[in-house]
Amino acid sequence: MTTIPARTDADPRFQWDLTGLYATDDDWKASFAAAQDSPQKLAAYEGQLAGSAAALLDFLRYSDTLSELLDKLGNYAQRKSDEDTRNAMYQEMSALFINLAIEINRAAAFSTPEILSIPDETLDSFYTAEPALGHYRLLIDRVRRMREHTLTPEGEALLAAAGQMGQSPDDIFSFLNDADMRFPDAADSQGEAHPVTHGSFVPLLQSPDRALRKSAFESLYGVYGQFRNTSAAILSAQMRQLQFFADARHYDSALHAALDGNEVPVEIYHNLIAAVRGGLPAMHRYVHLRKRLLKLDELHFYDLYTPIVAGQDIKVSYEEAWQTALEALAPLGEEYLSILKEGRDNRWIDVYENEGKRSGAYSAGAYGVHPYVLLNYTDTLDDMFTLVHEMGHSLHSYLSNRTQPVTYANYVIFVAEVASTCNEALLTQYLLGKTDDPQRRAYLLNHFLEQFRGTLYRQTMFAEFELWCSEQIRTGQALTADALSAKYSALNREYYGEEIVLDEQIALEWARIPHFYYDFYVYQYATGFSAAIALSERILKAGAPAVQDYLNFLSGGSSKDPVALLRGAGVDMSTPAPIEAALRQFGTLVDELEALTAANEGA
Image 1 (cartoon, rainbow, N blue to C red):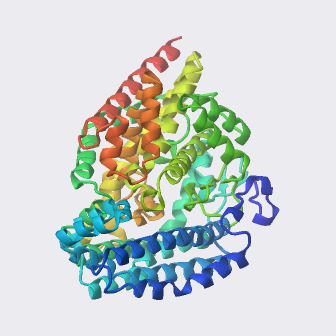
Image 2: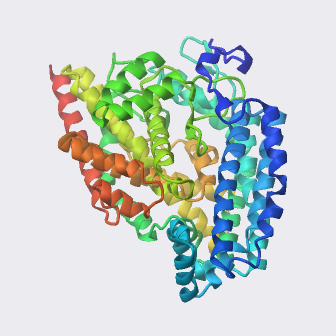
Image 3: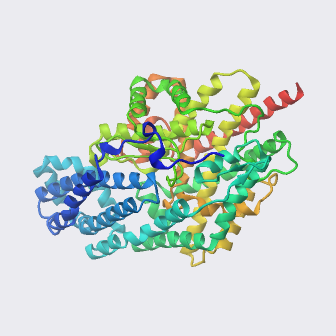
């Protein structure tokens, strides 16, 4: 039985080094104390922004300085909290930071209405009087674009004050999910116990031991079932707070509010769902193939993650994963590889699971400091893909921060998943290119198909479910546990087809998805995957010019709107064409795997 070590017992070589943010907790506390008067400093600008170019420039520069400071404060507190979510001191530090950020947002609430109040002619004269203000022209244009969704100074202050309540559903979900829930051990076919955690759950579902898969599945969802009404109340609160802010800002819906902030048309969201629904026959065919290759009379949801090609249980150590990753990503050039190595060698990464550690994986970082990556590495092929995925995020952040001023360094969520998924696509093509063995190739084809299933299809199903939840609240309906589970079951039936048994436990999967608290985030995994497939193919075919276009995209931050940034890299997401092309590639891969496995069975 594998035991999960305490944080203090783990090897520090495989833990991130947060001293780039703050050397000690006391340094953080001193910096936090020094920032306490920032709300008052911001408030001192109230009433001045429309009065002179100098005052407007001074305010925007101070805002940039404050943004850098908050970036460091927030990242340190949250990274430390994620090391062990049970640690009360870091929970408190995170809460203190959130409170300060809310106070700062409240103090700065006057700025948008004041900038909107400046007549166009006056603003033009400001640019002439203070040429340095030209640096902020794009930022100012974006503020003024939001004119019809901006309230009076009093209204903006009220919404800023409500921000803490808006954060509550996510906070409550995180504590319930990561700190409070405990799952019974799963038993394999020999009766041996295996711990079930957020980090171990998917690896257990990948086991060839079906008894273990079923036991882990029932263990996890049995606990979620005990909290189904609480989970429904939390998700309902999330959807209600999004609708509140959308109504307050005069948007047609919470979807419009979420996408408009990133300059993404809502048509892209609807195009995604429509395109993927059009590609469901290929998914149903893949599910049928999985059932046939596993030689099962009944295919269950706990059978979806185990490899369908026998004898190819690939174990990949962390060191081996790095060697393969560097070879696979070599087409991106020496500069890209050197930054990857810097991250590997200088403890950007928190590698292994420990007691209380936040589940999953992510990349995060502050301007002026390199990114940090959280993993829960368990030596699987999926973990190697997670490594290159999160390092894709990190390189995106690193290059944007290095190239762009703090004003435009942060890229919007719509492009956030492109760099990560492009790395995964390059890794897949590299692995496929290295083998002629039919069994190995079939295994890798299946793994690539699983990326499509998990990212393009599954995340689109999540997006459709999230949109339904939002629409229920917008139209005055209740989000009860029964209603949520019924809808979720129906979507699973539609997306996976009739060849799979609709296990009652899968109806509760919505209760464990943290991304439903990220405000219409999940659709961007699917759009980003589609863009990444197109970009990876262009990089491999066109070479240096495509690589340069891609690196320019990674360095772009928010210097252009996200659709324009991607268009510059060679893919147009304003149409469903990239999604449809990715779906066609999925169908082609299913064809190849069907033919390859049929030939193997006949041999």
